[in-house]
Length: 195
Image 1: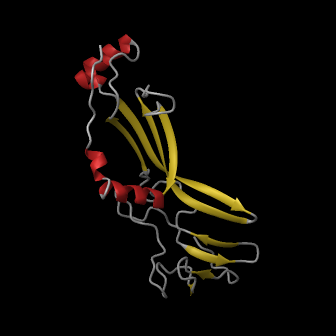
Image 2: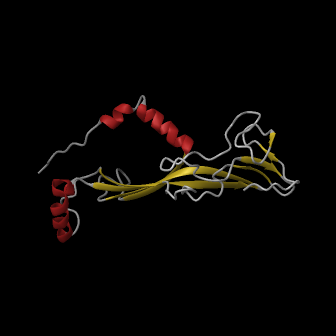
Image 3: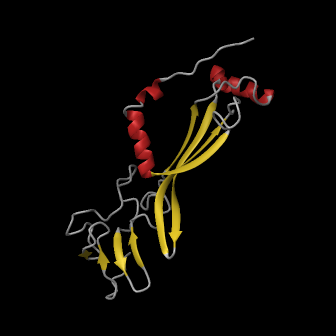
């Protein structure tokens, strides 16, 4: 909870006007200071609120998620996706045959389709210049595939990849894939046998 200390004044994260530490939204610009609602329980995902603080030792903008652990403060729901999808290269000749037989019994023909395990979670990037610490929220993706591509050096799909991008970078990509580049998502895998 924000200190009510008489020496600490709190200002709006957005318009920088002075506000009361307990205000749920800025009385000047109307911007909400609270965390978004949890899709599972409908309560706020964190108890902290956005604030701008000017102090003798520090000068900072603190969003509701400054010390957030990625879980809903009310129900504990963790904002992480763990997916297993059919996505990649045929895997008939890959792996141990005992394991392969078990996969075929469990999954049928889909056992050869090429799976990817995907994990999506929040992260944070920090850049420090002199005494100015800049924190950027990121979205981290980790993909582990049953098999990697083998065409050329450093081409195609790697067996495992991990990358982070800012929300702005994700939005720009989504906009392109939902707009002028939507045709790229309509393509299908194909094959040829050269033996």
